[in-house]
Image 1 (cartoon, rainbow, N blue to C red):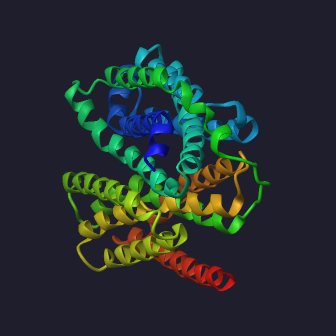
Image 2: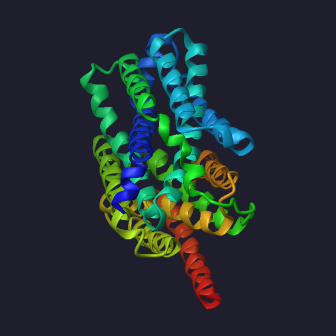
Length: 368
């Protein structure tokens, strides 16, 4: 194992830093939107198009990797992330900033597809654990960057310039990490489309997006103050980071789909408990369960679908479908429900998904 770490140290280092920067960049949009609105004379609602631009760019990056991914390396992804962040920092005007936000999102999508399969294959039996570590660092960046934003005077230009600078430095050290496919992949397996496991990806990312995007609002609707709701979201991310960090020690010991099924069950119990008990502790517990969704679904989907370069873009695209659509759809429904309606819906969806996961797991075990 030590030899694997020595061989692929550059890949792991560049992946960890890139995922931290992805989390940092995404988390910047929330506190930075009011500042952008003031700078460009917009309402906060209009400035929210920057967030939409980020996700449109992410979908573009995933599409690029699906159709032309074989020639794209970590250096390409880092370069686009750096250019996008630098463009946002430059403050060249509203539409230019939107355009650079799309570019940053494109680098985000490229990075997700570039690093996850490389790390999974490079570290062999420890691959699932390293994927867990990689995705845990995303949460670390998301937690740290809002604090950095405050320390630099709540200036979005300085904050995005810092992201761009770190991307550029990481680019210098990522040169040799693009050869891992040829070194470890062996024969490329045929592309196997497995819609059932992709449904778990859709639901998992949809749940994550709704909890992050709508969770604080749901807590406020349940009678929690805005300050406490914001603190609860921080607790959610701490639990999210802790569970993903735990995968470093668990992912190579237990089957990925087993961990996913248990995580869904824990999420269901937490959300349903939040419908009748004080919601804040259970919202934090939801963060721990949610942190286990994507890495384990990704590992299981790769196992079922093969090593074809189009597999990872397909999995990420399925997640984007859930992440983009679910908050909009759930937001429309919540207005007509009671103060705990959000947790009722999340709990019901997770319960049905957990039962389906345990049923599928039993069927897989029966087949051997």
